[in-house]
Length: 125
Length: 508
Image (cartoon, rainbow over all chains, first blue to last red; front, side):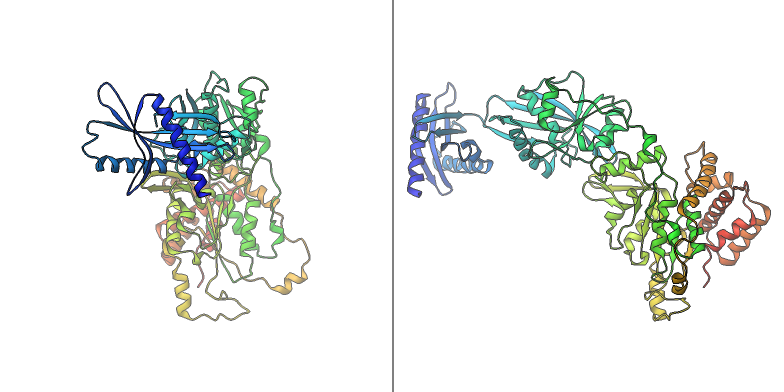
């Protein structure tokens, strides 16, 4: 079961990465892990003035029998992502100076046969 | 899209307009948040509204929903914001067309999508009337409360489904017709009748006087002498509530949720008998959201305290202000409110811990020390505020067994005399704010209580001999006035003062 969940998570993160790269985001790191926890995806979005470094939380669900992925993203989870992100910036002090930071979420729902039902990208909280 | 719906919040007994703003954002992470000091009940309202909408065949929007209850600095306790929030949501989703004129929505939702009996509907109606809001939508079970008010249209709502259909003009809800208040204020058969009490004629007479003038009464006697039974008969001999009084009482009962589903005006005079372990907040009122206490629930009625000396010291002393002023002002960190508290205090007590002090047949087993400690619990200031002191001796059980069935007057007869006395008082106080003799202040006494010369002489003698306080002096005059009213006498005569004195001066 645990192995299965792990594989599902990887699958979601790959899908999200491809989706965002199509939108013009640049990949930095996946499954960044520090002493506070893990961030699914870290991407960079080029802007005219300051580039943005974006921390992405990916949620994947197969079928909607147990609710939507949005419902699984609580305020507590967001706060955790924020803390990990801050730690990430401190650990990489010099690399991301003058970057704006943001947290985004990608919610993916799959059908039973693993085909994509929907991908929703939330760039505003 | 943004929607605005009007509802009402309370501070004390006054309504205040609350605007419920509901915004469904196009962008942003889906969620449902309620802001504006709604407390714990606001958090719970989310779940109720979500489920109620789902069960009313409305798909809950998977978007960022923000609800604001304005003004945001006002504490909003209670479940009555469910309906306005749900309506605001439906409006913001574009599922209902909103009426052009301002409407007031009020009520708690069940998970099923139906509306529950909600407290405070009467005050919501009153608020709407004052602010010229014509239409109010309230739960059907509580709608009768608001129906007694003229000038507003009350729409009883069964469920979310029915209100959606109504607002869209598919199937209208009929506004309830006004209930005539006069029809409601009919005489009712009392639960306890005075004729059930054997003997105790002088106690019945004292009850009659207390009821006629709204005087406070303390009954002292051994256990089983009928103190509790006598006091339970009191509501039966009190005149029925006038329309004005009934509205005042209904306000308090509505806000505390004491009106049963489907009920409208409070018709019977309140009779409250809090247990003697009551806390001070329970008795006087207060708490974090400033609720009325037992003294306010007994407004225009009777507050009966059995075993008065057992009441905690702080409660007893806290009773002083409401007895004297007829209202309680409660000041707390989060606000200041004044509740009306014009009640008759009827108290019962045993003369000593074992109860048989002065009883002819049984021996008192208490030591002098015990007796004095017991009686010391009733402080002078409290006793001073009680007009009628009555000793209720035990009834001979043999006599009880011999006499069969009815004896003495029935409550209805006594009530008719009480009503006559009250009518005289109503006429007397026509141009003042007073209601009964006990409400008179010292200055009113000079105006309304003309005494014969020999009556004045007797009173002066009594004051000197028994060292009565100034307050007692004035209270004696008030009781005499009531006794005179019961006889229909214009001036206070000697015999009236003499009778009043025997309820005051304790023979020990």
